[in-house]
Amino acid sequence: MKSGVKKLIVSKEGILFCIFLFVFFLMSLLSPGRFLSWYNLQSMAYQLPEFGILALSMMIVIVTGGINLSLTYTATLSMIVGGMVMANISAAGGNGILAVLAGIVIMIGMASLCGVFNGFVVAYIGVTPMLATLGAMTLFEGISLNITKGGAISGFPFEFLMIGSGTVLGIPIPMILFILIIVGTWLFLERSKMGMSIYMIGCNPKVALYSGVRVKRIIFQTYLIASVLAAIAGVLMASRYNSAKESYGSSYLLQAVAASVLGGTNISGGEGKIAGTVIAVMILQVISSGLNIFGLNRYLTNVVMGGILIVVLTINFLTEKRSK
Image 1: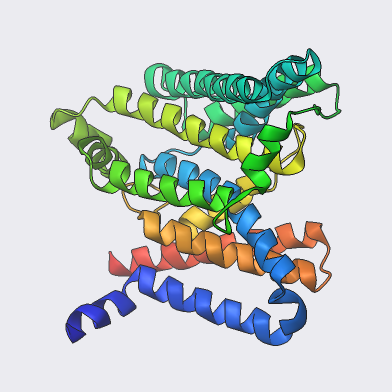
Image 2 (image 1 turned 180 degrees about the vertical axis):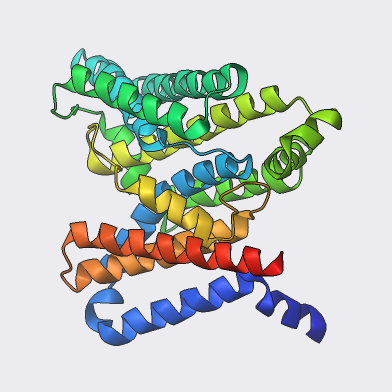
């Protein structure tokens, strides 16, 4: 029993959780009145799920040895298209619940098309994931800007707003959805046959192919699943902001990569755990919230996040080099 607890503490996830407790305690000590206020804790509870879902989406792609730079723009394009449908139905006097259901279905459908595009270009055409998704990012952003003309889509029904701001038994609805997605993603990635195939592809795609894994098909499906998760994050963002715009969540792209790598996911693929990514999301959310409370410019927050990412990548590289 004691050896099991000790093993858990010295594991990557255990160390990360200790870091989370240290960072949370430090922020609480530096500004107890504001950081531990009910408003700030509630704000983090509503922001963390959308960030966490995007981080999990990024993680499963990175495990294959790829990356998805179009992730946040997949979320924004889907929320814009679905938001227009909701706003039009609502303006025409349609039923609010039906408008919400139609909007969410359209959001998931639009994101699925984005995932199909990315998956096809990467898996079947063979374009490098970074270049393919960089092009897709520009494409999706351009489509979003063309639709909105740089403005925001609004006029959503009240029922939709409850998704991003409502509670069930005092627990924020976004947090409940996030917990369900954590469990579902864990079962998919770490307890399913397809999840095992994803890890094999990330370790060595040629060996995976000779082992009978349909590499192209699995990679295609991974990008599709990642885009659906991005759509769910987009639903939460649009509901919380009560509008949809192409710039929403743009800062989450760098943070999603940082959370994945900080959580122990190997940027080269083949390694990573859901628990590590979730804890890393919590750490970065606490840091971001704390820096915001201290009045640090939000652009400098990105500098801090970028610095954290570079440091973690450097440490991982040196550790891997030393072990070899």
